[in-house]
Length: 301
Image (cartoon, rainbow, N blue to C red):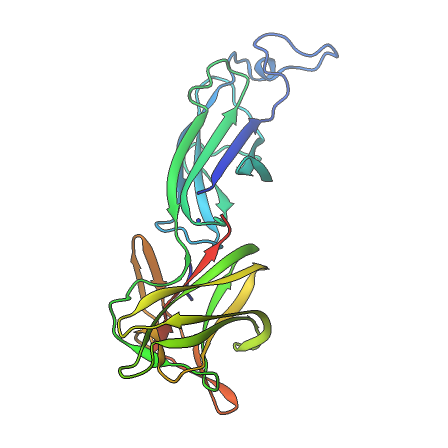
């Protein structure tokens, strides 16, 4: 499967625990945390905040690693983590037990490409908040297959013999475009009409048509990227990108691969092969088990 955005995520961590006053309980006679534990200071900081993935791709779910550090002599329970994206609340996580060594994981789904700032905030009742914030910056890349574009393999596509490449979304996302890497055969006409279609999956083949984007392009014998607008809100699931051309000379770049499905990673692009490339022949889709077509899916900024 091919995977493959600048947003700001703010994580607000609130420690839940009754009464942290250093020496007095509530008016109804219940004990404060400090009285119950015979301690004075409730203070936690953030020792580590990191992304447990080398290359985040839009729509995929990744783990964020968060390690708390107890700085005071009081020990709290039930720390809650609130997750924000561009200052918009997404969800809240609660930890009944604080693991100061192994830490905790929360999930994150990048939904657009570019440089992304992730911030975690730990809000407690101590006066010094300098140790309660951590910020990291990661780069999220478009979903797709576009690492080994130096390979010279390609397949011809027409209206009667279209090509298809699948991709999978693990969370809802609004896509805004699809980029495909195209060229033409020698002696073929440069100008041709290319149509990009997007289908829902149906039994590992294109099913319901969702998008039909057509434009005239000028192809060269050298491969180049061509952008198509395919604005659509999609849910999680498998989809197919299908290419058709009115002319006989258009070719779609592809990567050859072993049947074992080797995986390649190299910043800032990502490639993972599988057997999800198809060619329509006659009356049915046929698998091209050793090829992956080159594409990018752009998401909403």
